[in-house]
Image (cartoon, rainbow, N blue to C red; front, top):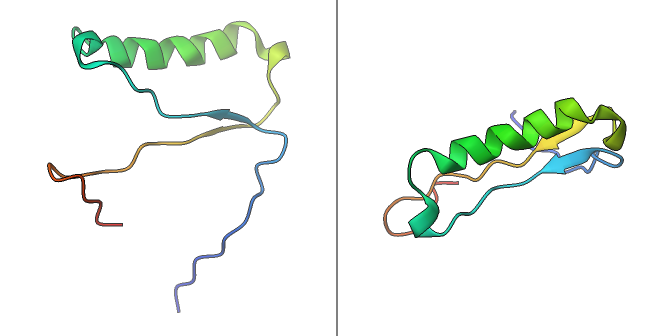
Amino acid sequence: MTVLNVSHELTGCAEFCSLFLEPAARVSSNGALLSKARFLFLAQFPARFPARVCAELRGYFDAHGVSPF
């Protein structure tokens, strides 16, 4: 049987959350550049961050704002 266990084993981790850009800023791959810049900052200054990093990724939503999950 497949079971989903809810837990919070992220204490002490750095967390990267979703990025939201205004529609006018969503040109020329600005979102991808900003996302990569966050990880480059982490690599440049590792002493400022914990050893473990987790990333929260925005889920899929259809045109009506409905998620299949």
